[in-house]
Image (cartoon, rainbow, N blue to C red; front, side, top):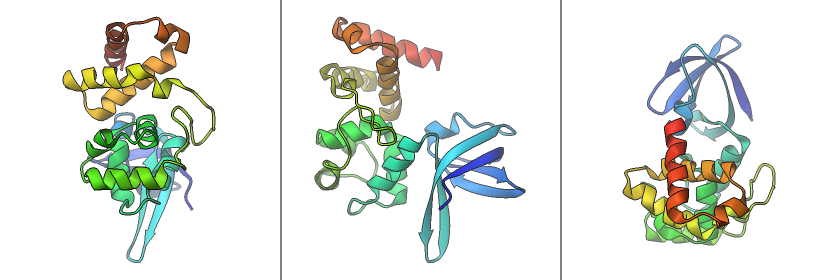
Length: 204
């Protein structure tokens, strides 16, 4: 099991990065969000998951242990292989995926290419009891209730209407949760939360 890789970025592609480790270039498949944080010639460290097949060894990389843990858990659902699991994490943030599965939000899951209504229902049925409560990190087990807050769906819908991708909308909402306490969020209107989410993208 290759748990992490660390080294110089020597090549970048649409969905992969090559990291030189001990004189060996390792090709690691990553999501677009991860690619944005990687730069040629710079040092990088990724949590990784090695997928072994009869004819191949494929390495998938993530910027955090939580993403990697969710990537591996998603593959335990019927019909979900590594490519679809990666596509799910490319479309939604880890916290948004966990919330969608836990709350049986089929429409959010159906935004992922390759997942229809039956597939979304199957994933929720098989993983809901194992995914962890909304706002809980699989790697740390720390609870938080903002992930299931009622304003989240309204703000996400507004961001999607403004042209955000599902992944970018999820990350903007996550930045709001990181910036404000639950008490502060409870005192704000949806439009005020939306403005804060928009500002987070400007800072990115």
